[in-house]
Length: 284
Image 1 (cartoon, helix red, strand yellow):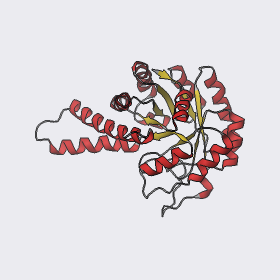
Image 2 (cartoon, one colour; image 1 turned 45 degrees about the vertical axis):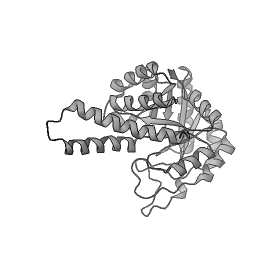
Image 3 (tube, helix red, strand yellow; image 1 turned 90 degrees about the vertical axis):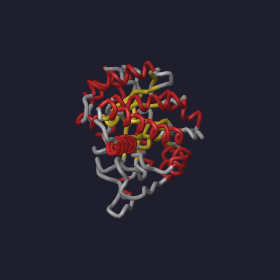
Image 4 (cartoon, one colour; image 1 turned 30 degrees about the horizontal axis):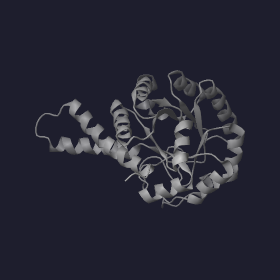
């Protein structure tokens, strides 16, 4: 069933857990995520990031995401991740996405506020939820981890700035920087949990954790306890699928067919997604 991000985050708040938000770039990724969610009977967020246009167009994958979310037996939010411009955000809403993220984190504060407010106004016409970001989270942005793995404090989200940002934009969830990065971790992540607590206390809004792949189960639990309600996850699921295909192809003596490759990858991604979902929801 298709729902908004706001509704699944209300569920997360009531249950003191986090909702997994899984980026997908293939049909197999969609299937892996929804099958895992249905088996665990958990709400889930399907995401497509604008940067993934290099892999597949939202015009191709977006309608499939919406259709399969509508058919799912669990609540599913279909969300645009890291929308970089307002036209692209409207494009996703026109095809049925129920939530969008405007990412103006590379802009100065005032421009980020102004653009985010416009994104909120656009989304309101569709009854859709909005996530936005301040701070920097990853090598694809500016990088929040130094060469030796030290956190770069100046790139972390300032709780006072977060409070002002939320009050002036009216967003539903805030992605903030507290030590995570996008992609593969080159060193063990060093998270500042106090930033999460301070933002929840000042801004009174669900916190979104980007760069969720590769974080330990204990660190996830700490983040959730402090107020993280949405956890973005992609890289390690995609890596699990790729590694499974690589290993299986190496073990095969006969011809390898592409449909077999798709199944091997999907099943490995599903297992990784299921494991992450269980941590996020504190399931045994």
